[in-house]
Length: 133
Ligand SMILES: [Zn+2]
Figure 1 (tube, rainbow, N blue to C red):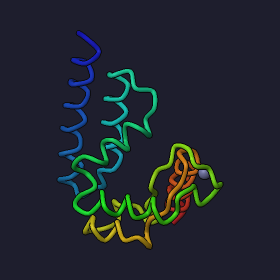
Figure 2 (figure 1 turned 90 degrees about the horizontal axis):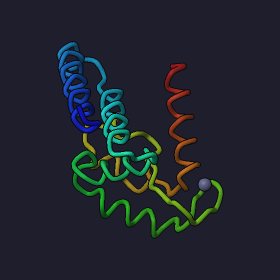
Figure 3 (figure 1 turned 180 degrees about the vertical axis):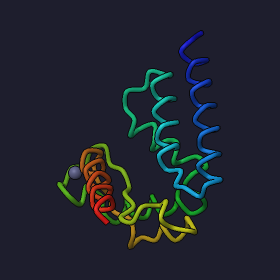
Figure 4 (figure 1 turned 60 degrees about the vertical axis):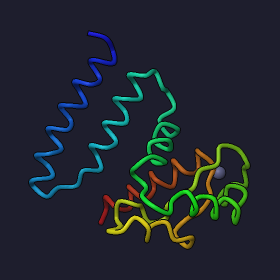
């Protein structure tokens, strides 16, 4: 079996598990992360944040994302945390998955420009605070 066939089988298995979790009313965020990791590994993509960013520009981020991303980039220009102007990404202060309507998550007040490493740290910190609630 090739790496890609193997990944396809793993993704299928994850989908089956996700269906069960969804039926039980549980959060599916973990499954989308696992699928991204499996796919990234299969295509030899070591940079997961980039893979995630590309996936996000597809279907997941919903309408209005492209314009919101551009507006936040033009407003902030550099990483608002460390001032870097490299590897910039638009961060959702309150994560997208916590919004019922994705377009609400893309409000400029909920976005800030961060470099890739500050973005990873911001997401990690949010998950850590969330876990203690
Ligand atoms: Zn930074």
